[in-house]
Length: 172
Image (tube, rainbow, N blue to C red; front, side):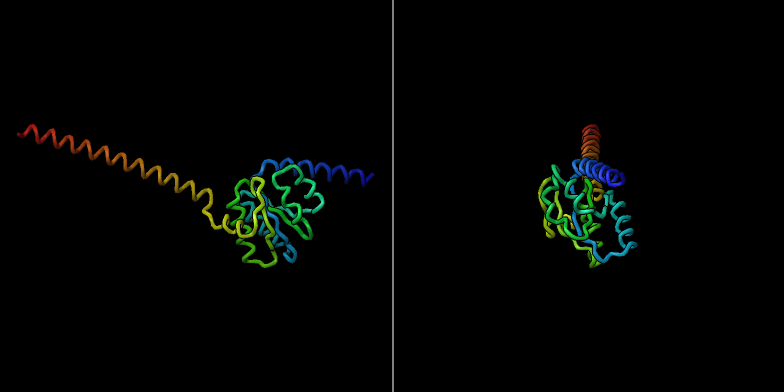
């Protein structure tokens, strides 16, 4: 009886995880051998603050969950002590994982995928070096505000020049 329950639980996990992955833009795979429980907890907290999810994966279940998703290309990485991080923000997730891997040599990033395209380590490093979505939004807002200020100052300058012209004509 217990074996049937476990099998049903595993099937439910695979189904739910597959549906979750179909909605995500980015997935990163890493080995975590040698990380302590407290280090994994720390990584989980950092990943969560980046609006991402970190899981230690049971390889057979993860491989099944990858089927019919944009991340099927990563199937080959699920050997050994595997972990995954996934989100809709590849920059923030890459940044957190790369920073953690620099601080802790026991986290080895194997690869990733974004929108069906496999990413190698160099491509993930490039993603990690990009500004975050919040930083990009702030830049865009700054550019929009700067443009509005420029327009306002142009209109104000033209109005004051027009007033001076009218005032000077009346004096003549």
